[in-house]
Length: 370
Image (cartoon, rainbow, N blue to C red):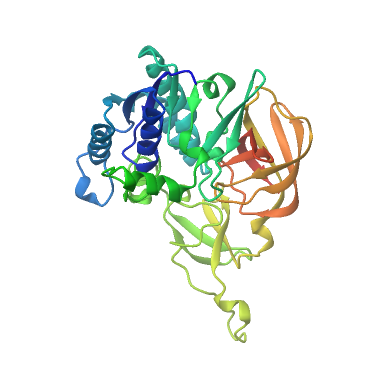
């Protein structure tokens, strides 16, 4: 095996820590980089979320135990320009973007990769649960071996040049093994909880954060029969399929006998931008929450070109089982997916990601669903 200079993105979490250790064990020259992607209110460690200062301390402690150098690099300006501005534009347009997808494409595998190459790196590595396979001259993006942790969905915009320079060591391992290794070698963050926050704002309350950046015009919450059930705080703060935080109870017709559906939960089904109305329906199985087709644009293909039209599988949200579908070009850079079975709460702004078995082919941003 050729020994290389590998620059590892150390986040302060256990996955990137074990990534760095595995590469050092293999004999590579390993350099750690801590990416700071967000500037504002970082001194609020007492605010209930994990600030980047805390994460950097954890990353530095890991580097010390492993015996590697670590550099603190500020990508906050890149992040604001390339990711956050787009994130806000999508929310203002009534869609629900996926910032982790953009962050990977624009920061972790662009700005960070460029920085690593300036340091003379042969490769970069991150703690993502995914794999890269070389097939002839082509690089394939594969799912991580742990089906519960696979993160290929978030990496589907990576191209051949990026994949050719990237290693995902923990993609070959189950998460339980990663935790075991971390404990065995005495990493200080071995028991640190996995981050569930968005890549740049960490664990802070999402609505409270968005409040500072988005205009919020309250309006009616209406059901599928046009009845007003309450008030929303601004359409940007809701996503299709959302059940929590609606602040409405059941609705009963005057004089009507109580039916089985009276207490069925409410879900967000549509956003009526023209009326500034949030449309909700009762019951997880309501037809307005089911879509047999979707269209997506802003496509990105791992191989550099779309797969041939035909049977594939797709995910329309991260923690979803692959769903059988067929892909067809729909003109003007748009594509259409037809599903064998209706998909639940397909959300414009989220990513539709295509698979052929364990191979992630790429995907795009959902524009509409029927």
